[in-house]
Image 1 (cartoon, rainbow, N blue to C red):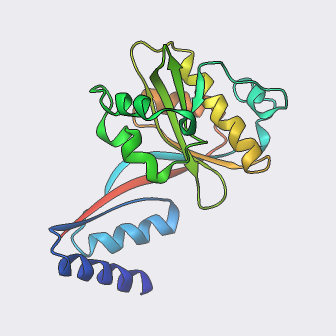
Image 2: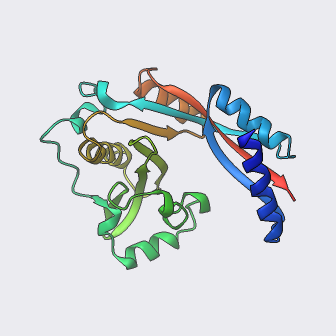
Length: 212
């Protein structure tokens, strides 16, 4: 009953503030997912499935072909890989002005959930042409919040960015750590499952909207 009571309180506060609706995004599985969906459904929220979210424990990937190099001492990122904490305001402004980046994937939209030192950009000729935005999860791991690659960036930029983020997380979180990531398209989902060799836990990313 506590979940329902908190849900009712959130609805009441939203009404008092003059909101037209209350929205929520959540990532759960099993009984917790069923309970949260029911909480919103009973209040007219109609939960909608967005995409799968995978949880991988990186402690067993030190020898894996794709990630292994980034999880060992001596790893050096490509010269074009730069942390967002090192980008200039001009570079960030030019990046935010690009029309080919969906609004929900922009740095300005994700910054509150990301760490500037765990988010890496591919910089060529002074311009950010690809990036991978990472943050810290509640259980002391890494959450990959958004990935984007412009048409002018080389295909090798994304693997380099991913290895760079994993390397930074490896040292920040003390070796083995959980990594969370989602994949919107079926093609990327298939690639993700291949990279983690099927050894991952799958959650559901949901979206609910309660009209007030």
